[in-house]
Length: 100
Image (tube, rainbow, N blue to C red; front, side, top):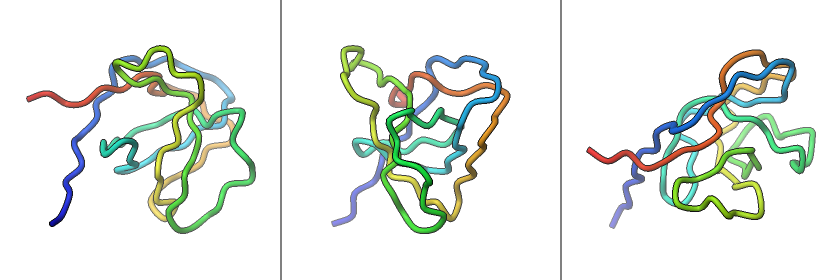
């Protein structure tokens, strides 16, 4: 049996300047896939691996989990991700599951 991840959508964003960010394609958290740009948590161990799939802590809240104490860890395929050391632009700060 194969499991299909549901899709996540950005609910809130903010504009940042000079921040450590990662652009991901189909990164997963709690069986939900997300593509977009996220801030890498200040609690993440650096440097990041450059290849393979790894858990990356990001500064992002999840819909329905506003009281979360820690940064969620997304499973990221680093072969398709791009790390930006001094990113200027919009980042997603809250995601929710897509509801058709």
